[in-house]
Image (tube, rainbow, N blue to C red):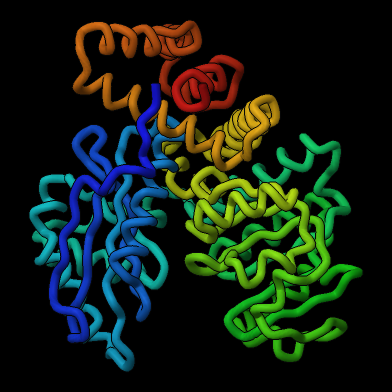
Length: 414
């Protein structure tokens, strides 16, 4: 049994401030799991309640696909031009005050998103009357890297399923920011031929491949404008990146970057996004009908949240779990889609919907539902991990070995 998530309204939303004024924002909790919804705070001049609601739903799919114990949520605060650093801090502090009850009760667990920084999140928490929680610098976890890693692994698994390799494949990448920089490095290490890149400053294209090291140096020195005079390539408007010849397209921009106006011009055979909601479900269906395989963002970019659930593992073990077990999970997703004759997106949403029902039943279901949930927890892989951890200690349980990998398979990748 699965829940028709797409056909349901969000569980909760709140609007704060007034549209058209200096203070206007919203928080949407799509679903409550374990009593909470989790998702970052977006700060752009164009963010809308509808966009935040769609992103919150994407977060529900993201958590549910990997059996992560939270519902999806997202918040948005409309940015106004010319705001000073002090005014910005006051704006986020006020936002924290407005949604403070949700944060204090942990019904809403926020985080970073497009346009926000650790300082913004600290101001929100201060407004809510709470101290800022330890972030990536204190934890040693770089969530941007793990977002890039799951995108990379997803693309690798997809091409392997189609008897291809990333080595030698031509790639178009939108965005060379916190995630894109890591992704470029991973693609280069795999031998991919990155032929096109876009930033807010424009796009560059060279069918023979761009020098990734030179791109990263130029990006570090000149920011997004490095594309305006990068040598040995063709300069293009950013919007034309998608239409260039390549095997793989990696969208990393805002919402609905794939739309009716450009999908007919896309030559790429595969699309694996960094960005969330870069395509509506209708656009996904059109891509599928045209023979373009699209993996939804809630699958491909899930490393940004999943890495925190691997936080007790060593850095090497986190990397190994994603490169090995997450990749195998993507392979099973593609195989299930092939067997059903449906798109990867539709298959992934069905899996997420079934997982959501199972998690909700484990909390609030009848005796038989709870018994079934207990049976899943007592799987051989999880039992072996629990027993071995007691025998060999906590240090052993943080390393990558067959028992640890089997445990994470049973917990998150079934």
